[in-house]
Length: 454
Image (cartoon, rainbow, N blue to C red; front, side):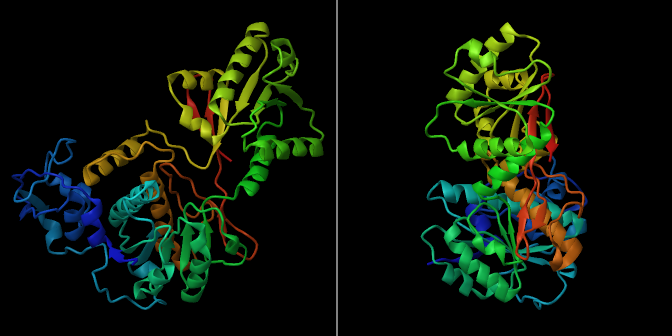
C-alpha cells in the first residue's frame, strides 16, 4: 500500500543522528535532546533555521560534532516564544484552495520513489532531502512551506496516492519519476488546479495541452534539433569537422545528422573524417584560415581518447591550426586529471542542462549542510541530486511566493542564481512549460572554466 508522509515522519526515516554539546549562552533556552532527534528537525520544530541553531551552539558546525540523546543544547530565546513549524501537522486543516498562495504557506507535494530498495529510490531520497534543505533556507525569506511526501515506486498504485485528500490540496507537486504516472497526474492537476513539476521524466505527451505542467528535461528528439541549432549559431565563424568514430552503439547519430542537415541548409561547408584515417588524411580535414570546431558522432571515452591522440599528432604537424572540440554531457563523467588537461588543451565545450562546480562556495556550503543533517555525503553522481532538488524547490517556491499561482517560470522573474541546475521555462503552444535553459561548459586553454548560458 502506498502511504502518505509529512516531513515530520519522513525525517525520522531520512535524517541520521547527530551529536550536541551544551553552550553557555545566556540568550537561549536549554533543551534536552530526545532519541532520534536531529539538528534539522529540532530547528524546524522550534521555528528557527539550522544556521540560527548552530550559532547558539558553538562547535555544532564541526564535521565531528555528534548529537546525543539526553544532552542539552541551546534554543535561541528570541525564537522560543514564536516557535512555528514549517511543515503540516499529521491532520492539517488546510486553507481554501482559492486563497492567495502569496499570503499563506505554500502546499508542496512530492510524489517520487522515496525508499532505499534500489538506486531509483536512493537518488530520489537525496533529491527530496535537497527540497527539505531549500524549505529550511527559504524560511529566512519569510516563505513558509507545508510538505506532504508520498512514496511512489515503479510498482506503486498512483490511484491510492491521489485518493489521499491532502493530494488535492497541494498548490504544487514534484513528480513523478516514471512516465507511466504522468497521464493520471495530468488529469488530477487539471481537476484540482495544481501546478506539476516533472523533474526527470522526459515522456510527457500531455505537455502539448496541459498548461499546468512544467517539464525540466526535453525529449532526445527535441534536444537534438535545438542543440544542433545552438552549435551552428555559436560556432558560426568556425569550420566544422565531423569525425566518424566507428561506434555502432552510439546514440549521437541523430544529433550529427541534424547538424549536417542544418549546415547544408545554411550553405556551410564542413569536412568529414574518420578515426581510421591516417594522420595526414585527418589533418586534411582542417583549415588554417579560421578556427575549426570538431564534432564526434559518439560520446564514448575510448573514442574520445583516440581523438585526443589524433589532435595531438595534428598540432605537432601543424601548430598554427586553431580548434575547439564540441562534446557531450557524458564527457563530464570522464573528468580526471588527465582528461581535464586535455579538455583545457583542446578547448572543449560540453553542452549540459546542469553544471556541478564542486569548487564553488555555495556548493561546498550545501554539501557540508547535507553532511551535518543527514550524516552522510551526497552521492558521487552527475548531477548531484540534492543540489537538483534544492534548485528546483528554491526556484518554484520563491516564484509562487512572489507571483502567486500564475508563476510561469520564465526568464527574468527574479534573480535566483542556481547552484547547479538553471531553469528557464517557455510555454509550449497552448500547453505546458518546457525548460529551455542551456549551457556550454567551456574548458578554456588558460585553465579556467566558464559557463556560457545560451
